[in-house]
Length: 208
Image 1: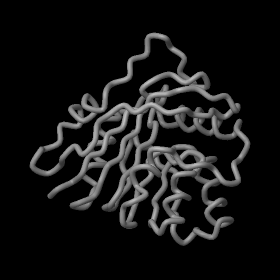
Image 2 (image 1 turned 90 degrees about the horizontal axis):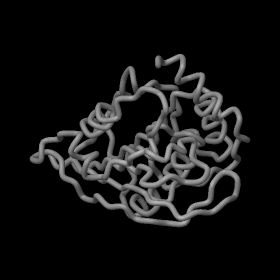
Image 3 (image 1 turned 30 degrees about the vertical axis):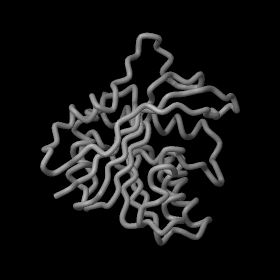
Image 4 (image 1 turned 135 degrees about the horizontal axis):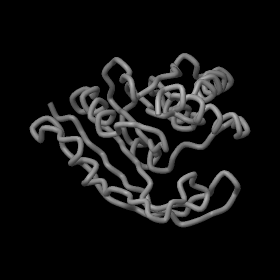
């Protein structure tokens, strides 16, 4: 499917959800990034904007991108409402077609899954190349199917973090895998239901 299909799909997903006034950040983001020195961050697939707001409140300069103009417009409004519009730049960007310019200390890709065409390995490889030396790529994927997930296919297979890292084919003398595991947690979905879920967490650090 092309860009128009992706825009239509994700605009519909976000338009059908009530606009959040203070969206929550992802658990793994707060766990991993809380102790890092703020710098420049890129949020791939920013969605409701909880991660971008959390980062900005801690002093990060955030570029937040999403294929959905609804998500981007909502985040722009939220950034102004929360007084961090000087720290968040929200842009509509189709990662299937191109990658945001710049160099970053942190690139986050939380649950960058889609039923539409997306060469994830190419996107994440570009993210790794967009890191400054010492910068980190944080990839958090689903490791299990939550009751509220849009993908309820019982045959779906979730690649392990090590498999995701291998697909990136990054030179070991320039990047190192700092973390690759599958922690579990209790999560609450948009409808208020709770369930135990598995996250696949990968952290790649650029060393040179």
